[in-house]
Length: 179
Image (cartoon, rainbow, N blue to C red; front, side, top):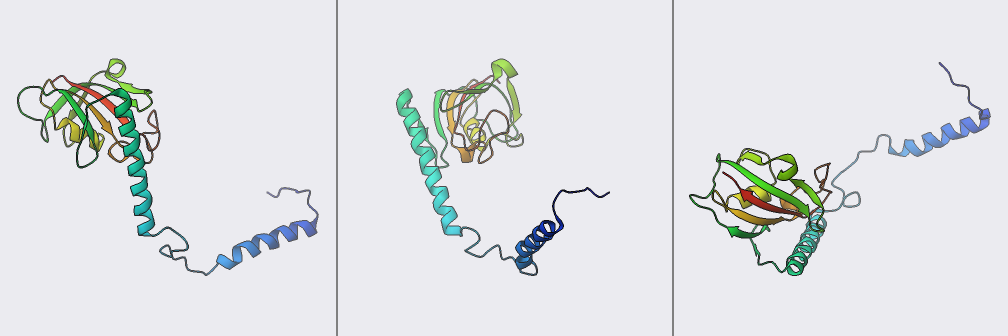
């Protein structure tokens, strides 16, 4: 089915010629995605990533100082404060863990809580959870309580969770292991 347009034939021909003029130079040309003029190089990406990691770390330290918290940092970049270690053995892969939690952003925005969603049950090392939370739970024993601060690369990363956690968000977890 043809749609009648209101353009004079000369203008329609001009538009078609312009479209071909814009597209023609790219026809037959190979695209080289490794070309430095087309995308940032490895060193530039490393530099930007290092800058973002350092800025996130500064934001976390500012939060810790404002809240007067006594926290430690792991080599991976997870910040933690264990208020109760719990008893028994430390959690390890394939242990089933049930815990109450409160998940917020650095500005205090509440994202998720076991009060509204119920306690979370996972099998450590197999259930898909944030890498920082996976690391933090391994520091606890049954009955343990802790505060974890996850930088974006240990939380939901560049994309967020497509719900309540925005892209590149630092996430704060209050954890109370039930069993």
